[in-house]
Image: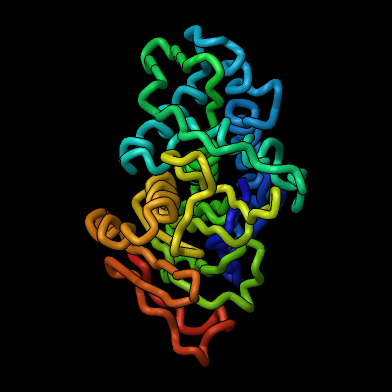
Length: 334
């Protein structure tokens, strides 16, 4: 899923390749420009495997086939088993705020195909929202790789699959190439290895924002950074503005006070879990994120900014839009 958020700013000491994947922009950068072609090859391979395993929009994907099992246990691949386990871990970590059983709710809201194909506006009414069944009804046997979901339930790994893929791909590319690498999947970022000054990463509402116009740049030395927001991936149905982050308690687009939340963490999966949950938590997000101890930056719908847990303050107004100036350190949690 494409999403608002952070993107890498790649200068003369890096080389990068960018392409479309998973309904988003994928970028891989290597320090010093070494082995960037091989890095792109590995990333394309990893993302192809993730798409075939986890895509809700492919009738031939593995997760789509499991949805046609009518409640029977299905033996799944090691990759899908790992991806589902990651989604269940995130659901538990966030107290159910990020839940893989929201697939039917997203379909009811009109997000029933790749986002590029979702009509920006439609007069047809939105079906009355239904609470998600809840992640605890999913049964996963990781040893025998058996997955069982209740008949009629639609699994959606969109809230975790990109971050999960970024972590996997960065580790694999670093292993294959032996160089420091950054992987960015629509704002879900993971780094393996770091240049001396860290990887410069810009924060913006849209992951396609030019580095020359981003407001904030931080340096990422390890782990992951993810941003979640409600102002880019939007559409209208029946006179309502909707977005892709669903509150599982209601089955509707989350009502929130935040337009963008960015979090740094030991992995992109954990960073994305926290940033997505914060949108759902709304006003309750600051104390919950503070308790997690992860550096984060929250932007309210009125534009005011709240930084927590060591996230550096925004640069002065005069330095905004100058990605090369005033790069500040944002140390991820150990």
